[in-house]
Amino acid sequence: MRLQSLISPAIIFSLVLLASCKEEKKEAAPAAGAANRNMPIRVDGFLVQPQTIRESIEAPGTLLPNEETNLQPEVSGRVVALNINEGNVVSKGTLLVKIFDGDLQAQLKKLYVQLATAQKTVERQTELLKINGISQQEVDLSQLQVNTINADIDIVKTNIAKTELRAPFSGRLGFKNISMGAYITPQTIVAALKQVDKLKIDFTVPEKYSSRIKIGMFINFTVEGTLQKHMARVMATEPAITENNRSLRVRAVVDVKDKTLIPGAFAKVKLQFDEVPNTIMIPTQAVLPQARNKKVVVYRNGIASFETVTTGIRDSSLVQIVTGLKAGDTIVTTGLLAIKPEAKLELSKVAQ
Image (cartoon, rainbow, N blue to C red; front, side, top):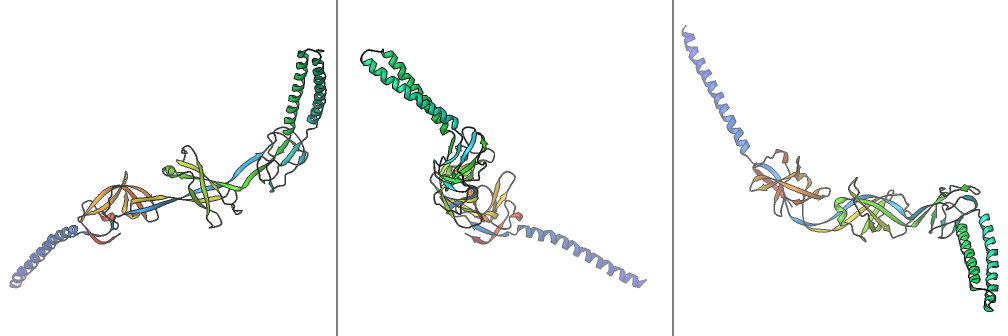
């Protein structure tokens, strides 16, 4: 009995001491958590400074011949002469196809005979008019006959010319689609003719760059299979923006002859625009996309301030800030996901 009375107080004292220690630990834990929350977050910063940039963009393009057309006859008929050597260069006015014109030639000979007779009649009547052997009216009617025959001769000559298919400009012939003796119509495509000694290049630029495309500005481009850079000069733009993709079509002329450039080839066009002074550029990772806008965390006297910004052009690592920042601001570039508005910050280092 005496042993139990001595042990019981000791056990009770130990239990009380253990409970008090646990209570002290519970009270100490919230204090430590509060202390951690009040500690500033260590981040890296970037000092905003204005700079001068030269913007450039790349756009897809297509090489085109300076002139191209499908050769088609004006009239129907049988081919009696064919002067198309596939792949050869021909000069403007070269006769390529001749259609049978025997009936027209016969009409022309007949008209020449009638013209000769009518002209002699006018000559005789003119002599008779001098001696008052004929009236002026009769002479005028004979002269009208001469003029009518001359007009008919011009019509037949025009029809004969339509039986000849000539090169409208100097260029290179494509594959021929007809053979000697074939019967062709105005819908028949005889061959294609392309002017390849001078090329054009068509490309498109996004709508926001449309005002910066100037007639006469130079562009660089490369084609597949080679790294050689070629130069072209902007000659024209479409008068309106394309609605389906909101872009502007541009056409440039390639001034330098180069046999490695082939019409229809894909080209990568690079445009260099004028320098833009006093531009604010910041690291791309510093911009936080939001549902309706974009934010940047600005370091202000050790406090995080979330500022709404408007972005512009960008490259591989930097983005332009159009509105929302000014020179001298320090923005945060690391630990952005852990930062909340009005959070305390501590800068580890500041880049420029």
